[in-house]
Length: 128
Image (tube, rainbow, N blue to C red; front, side, top):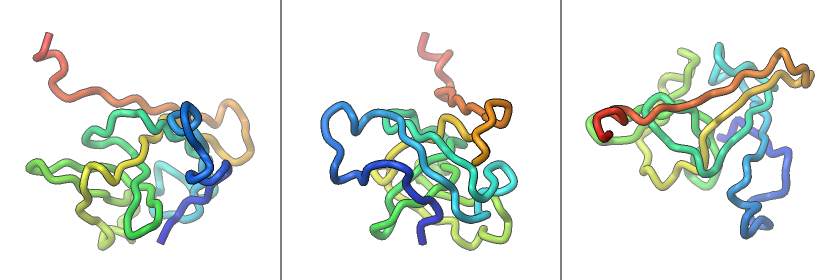
C-alpha cells in the first residue's frame, strides 16, 4: 500500500525535538507522476501546514501514503496525480496527516534537480 520508503530511523525510535525535524523518504512508485518521479527523494516537514493542494504524507490503514491533499466541503481527501491511480482517491481525517512535502530531489543528488514547495494559507490576507 505504501509507495514510499524511509531513509531514516523508524518513527517509534524518535522522540523530543527529533520527531519534529524534517526527514527524507524515497518515492517507490509512479502514482504521483508527473510531478514526482519514481525514485525521487522527498523532504517532509512534520510541522508543515496541510492546506488544499499541499503534498502530504498521511497514515492510512497502518501504512504511510504520499498524496495531494484536497479539501472539499470541509472534508479531507488524498488523491494521486497520476490518472491511472485516480480510483485510489480516499477521504481521511485531518489527524492522519503526518507532514507536508517541502522539497524534492532527483536520486542523483544534483543540486540543480531540487524543487521546493511552499504553501499559502487561503484567505490569509483577510485576517490582517
